[in-house]
Length: 170
Image (cartoon, rainbow, N blue to C red; front, side):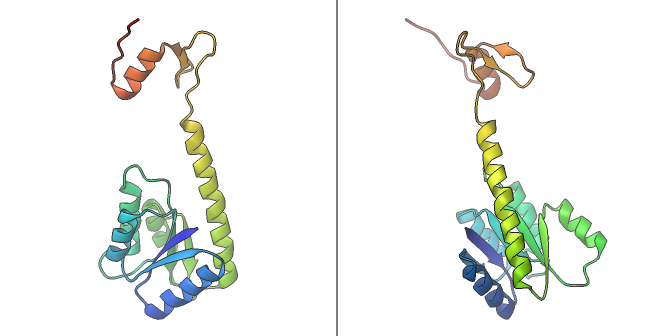
């Protein structure tokens, strides 16, 4: 899996990078939130590990920007925190869209476990997205069942979903 790291402390960044690479992940390392956003915006990844406090965009602002980016598959966001982080800060981070937290100093078994959970959740989000893309069409009457469990003509459904009008000809 490709993982984007946003960490302004060079030693902590290298330790995290080496740990993630030793677990078999491909890592892109950035040194601040602005750099991380530019890298993500160019080529979105499914997992970001970001320090909370950094120059430029901090971890919460980076997470909000990632969540606001249109037409992007779900990105799991892990925030690096200090040991002294209190419950009110966890609420603030969760409200910003953060999925999980890792405390510094980093613990390899904990990182590995959190990454396995992230992979599982990302797999589920992919499956859900695929299921939502399926359109239920009756094989006999060729009508489509909408969210209200009502069967309607294909033309009506397409018009409601896309605004497109269809014409018919023989």
